[in-house]
Image 1 (spheres, rainbow, N blue to C red):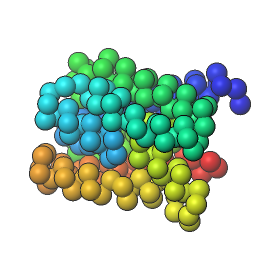
Image 2 (image 1 turned 45 degrees about the vertical axis):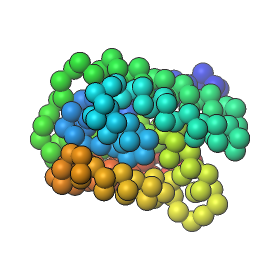
Image 3 (image 1 turned 180 degrees about the horizontal axis):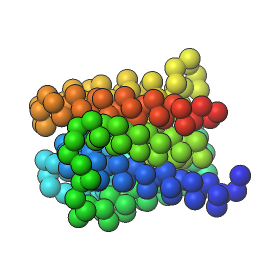
Image 4 (image 1 turned 120 degrees about the vertical axis):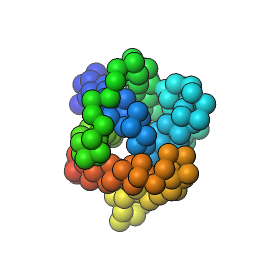
Length: 189
């Protein structure tokens, strides 16, 4: 598949993640895991844009990605991060679509997981922990989604102290939906 076609799919995937974050998750204090989750927590604490932290915190992981996964992966991933950062910035003024926890978990989790899965399937990633999950999954029987879930248990645990117990439970439930959707959408990866 051409670089251009891959870029179009990655644009779509990163846009889905931005929609999930800004229209379902962030303003309901439901976090994603990985660098995105850490960025949401830091954004909440500092009142800075979440996109700024996404760019800063992902940089070391993309240096690792370049070393192990190549230049094309790095370029597609940087493009995905830029689309995600711009998308979260542009969608930030728009109010959330719902405050209903069930809808937030299902719609936010599905959109998040599908966006991440599409991005990975077409050769990029949106989060430093996904880089590690891709590398580890190539050398073990565990899936990318299982590794991402494992990495995120700490982040979800820490969200209890920042947002509260219910929000942490909603975050974990949302990520479970996302993790299942990630694995489903990249089955053939």
